[in-house]
Image 1 (spheres, rainbow, N blue to C red):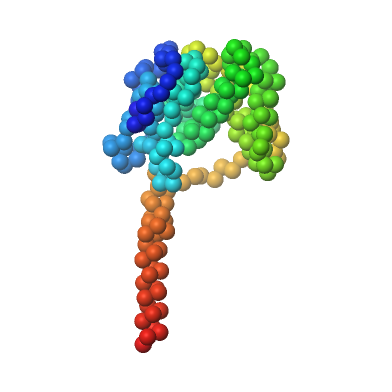
Image 2: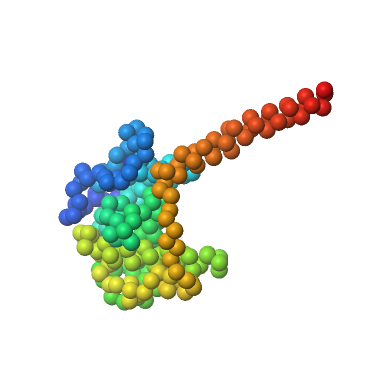
Length: 241
């Protein structure tokens, strides 16, 4: 379970769609050192996803999903099933599997949604949501305290997570968002941001980019100091000559 002790709450429920022993990173391209890292299974209440993250610029602690922080066992299972679907099925979102860091963000959106429903609509489940007002209020609350420049981005990201949660409804056992959020409008339309066309420039795969980033980090963290020291020594020698 990636080194964390599962803390708390009621025991996790059983999924009707995913085997408890299913490897959550199955089918994803893993890091070269993946054999030395945890291989989380669906039943674990902590998923250490480092083996599926290729870039060196994220702390290990930020690549662990701690499901035990979701006290409600129904919503804990919902979060697991949703994230498992996102990890393994590219058809949910434009044919691409998301980065591990994207999943961490989506998990935080889910936690915020569950907390919002618990506080403002006690007893209400996702399946009970029948109109957009509850979801619109959630987006508004999430944007409180966010600078004006970033409000559209926050609304767009949260709205997209709600759309994906709806798309994954047939993979969820105990609770699901059956209602189509915002009548199917795009996340950018909901955010009110202008959009002139999707950037479809091919992206460099993380496993290709990773060695270059590691080299750049080595230069900044190690080699640069040696180079500066050598240059200083060269100048001192030149001045004393």
